[in-house]
Length: 132
Image (cartoon, rainbow, N blue to C red):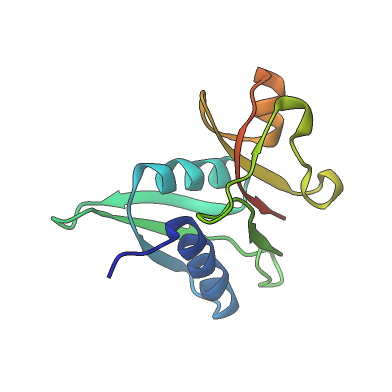
């Protein structure tokens, strides 16, 4: 069975694994998911991200992060652009997550970028998700 929205599946797996206090979550691999997870790692929301070849499409192994009290670093995840309703924005319309305290991930002509980097490079694109 094929997934209709693999990005929403990735975000849901991360959310569920953090609620269950898991250290690692394994997701089916793709280039887009790998790039999205790399942006989340750079922003400090997840730990190490590694690729494992399983003979099919590969798997991404994501190490989750928790603070000193054992609480998840990620408070919330939200899928913005969905298969039934794509959301594209110009550089001047890029939204801010949680009044600037979160991060918005975009798919642009320059690759998968955070909202800050997209503004810096002056590019718009498809708004994939927000995380805070």
